Length: 165
Image (cartoon, rainbow, N blue to C red; front, top):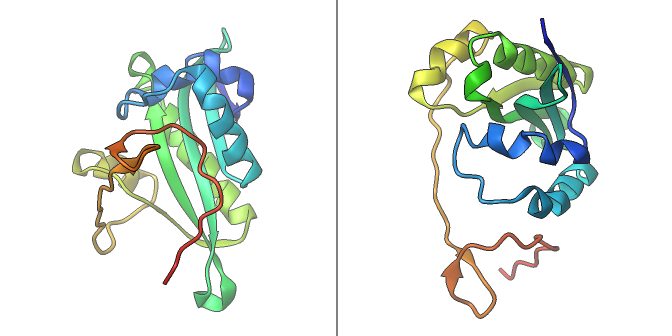
């Protein structure tokens, strides 16, 4: 094995992290723009793992977000997000190792379940990791507002939310 798994550090943002995420979808951030997002996610307890090769370049990543529930006596669930392996490193067990490491972290954090969303072509991969299809996922895409109230995209940090009911 010519790679290892460890937690994401800020310096990794310039070592192929963004390019690896690009295998999922358009990231739309430079490494510099990703720094405040990295810091906010770290401060909020998101665990992001990376697989690094012998040159310390990022070749895989996955994140675990823990949610405290009211149900199940205040139990916790883990959400696995943004599982990506660089196209040149796929098929080497990196994705499976990242998933299993996050499952173990969720166990350590006393989660009663781990969930994730994926497209249909990835279902067999996740079934091999012990997951099973359960119910349906739904999605609603919301336009992001930029200063001035118009629609667009903004990479500005999200502050405290105030909702009027």
